[in-house]
Length: 259
Image 1 (cartoon, rainbow, N blue to C red):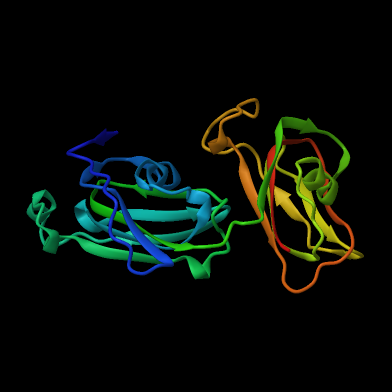
Image 2 (cartoon, one colour):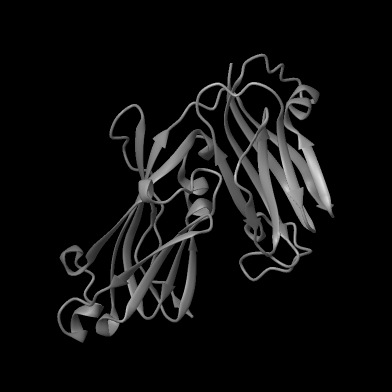
């Protein structure tokens, strides 16, 4: 249950050429269990592509009734929970003055999720939010390619040949600097796996979870998918391949590389 007082979504000023702070949430009161979808809110207020940025921090000003509230930041499959304290006596819960709210900060450098992961805050309890601010950092996306796989269902063992897929999309990958691979997928039973092969080296396999946000496996909504990321440094000669095992539904594979 949510009682909306008022919601504002305004774009804050950039602190420098490479960093941007945006306010995505205004004052509201939440009761029970609620999910605030930060990525959706950011897309509504940002006048640039969100894919050009990575999330480096989140700040929320809030307070809870009785001090029993909890706020959990979810970045991809990683979580960080904070206690939302009350301010003084219960009567102060009704006060909207900025000084009556606590400031809660999350440092995303402590969490591996990046721009292609879920960005959500899960609230539990009766919580009054004053504002939520996202701290973004601009990143180069010159060679960032989304390989759309159309919510395709894979069963058994399968390989996606990334270099060939990039070439088919008109990208002539001459260099050997793979930087990041993101798999947007979900598995039927939550026990499927995927890993990336670069040359003769294999990354650690990651588990592909079940459908997210309470949506059915058949759903094609972006919120129903998990996002798994692999990062690479230095030269990465040889094949670039994504290996998958299990019953998996794939929306896309995102590849970042340098020439």
